[in-house]
Length: 101
Image: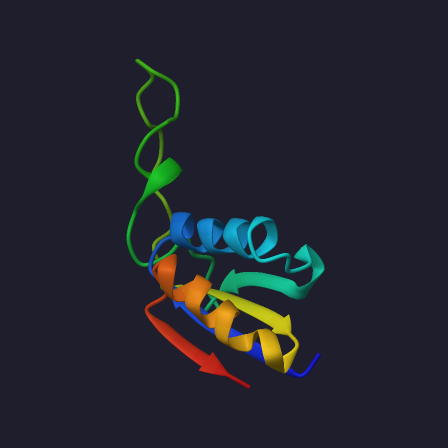
């Protein structure tokens, strides 16, 4: 791999959608995509969204609260010639910051 593109997301939902688009629409291998909490603490992101807000079952109340300890980091290993499309996909999914290494 020539590059690693690192993006920060405010919600777990945005990070998950980014991974889904990279794999399904851009053909990035899932084994080349890594997701983790940005800091040392466990985190579901900086803002509640998706399953953190709703239970997913009609008429069933949401239980518990998400661990909102910071952003979610998605890093993608890719060939240099694909780094532009990877960065675009991450931005479209809601990345708050991008960095190429």
